[in-house]
Image (cartoon, rainbow, N blue to C red; front, side, top):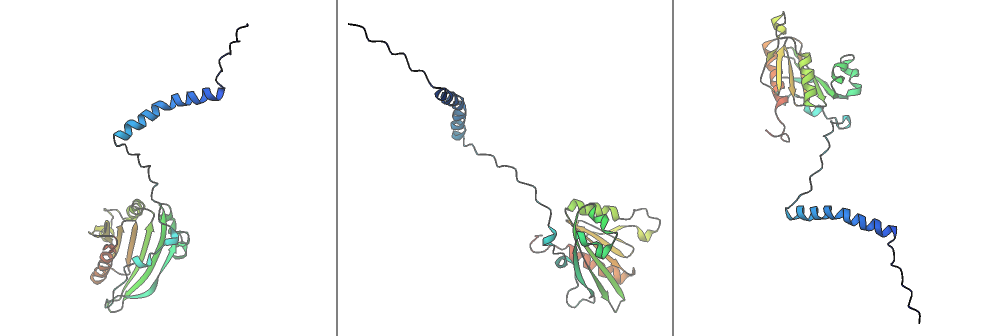
Length: 210
């Protein structure tokens, strides 16, 4: 009686070889995951995107202007108005480039008058994209400390982040804001008024904290 024919062993298919190889490659990663889980491993937080610069669509500079409170001798004679950066030329044609170069969001302006003292003060409030941009404009426009005319030399005062008096006017940098208070004439009364307005502007709002 003939012997039964031996059956050859079944060969593994290519797909099975690939699956086996993938399993072998994954074993170290699985072991590392189990080890780190036992040590309380926490997945690192991905880096957060940088905060975007303020948008001109949300421009609200009028509320930041230091307008005189009730009972003040100063009166608003030119109502406050604001312009986005691309339209600042409507108010300061030609000068807008100095602000756009460093990054500007917009401008607000108004005029105040004290009839009894014959004082006129023009307010120009610029919102720059960052405090660093505001500082660059502030520094670029500050007169030299050794200006030939002593009246034009900056006299620094403790208001906001940086501020100085020059030629009867006051210039203040607070955060990303740059405020110019331009008095028509330099008198003790005018200086007192613009300093009061500058301090009012630099005073933190309730939402900004102390």
